[in-house]
Image: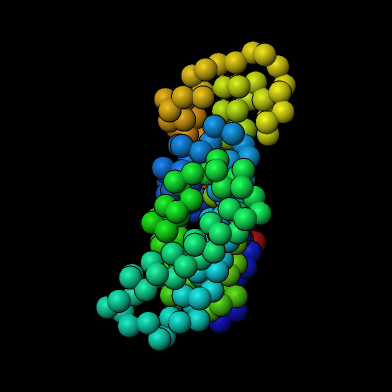
Length: 214
């Protein structure tokens, strides 16, 4: 069966965005979005682990016994998380420090385990790699946008560059994280429903036109 990479991309970034639609990975989303760069750092780390773990799970999907598949998936994920930690600590120590304890907690990130269980264990290597890539991109985009909004409003800066002295301290606090996340989810749901309604109307119109022709 031919792999629909367009659908995989759309699902990961828009339709089933892990942060804004499925509401997975909530802890790092709330804790690390004080700065846009944190979103990029965490997003890149999660994307790397998603791609690598999806590939390995897909390769071993017919070998891993069903009774131990979850422990096996966690072991695979933990291995790649360890690699990410070592690489960041060696080459990007500032990002390593900013991500703090949320970096090792990628091991239990619901997004990665869910994709291993629901997709990679049932699909081929290329499809699984694409799923990991676009799910990771969807996660990264959501965190970066939220981080940008909170950084601009909370500290008057963007990517660490000072823009102005005006600040709203609320957005730099945990309550501001919940508020920003809620607003993003609401806007995403509104936009998704709007697009879905337009598609339904277009589809209905096409059906009516077909009936008229017949």
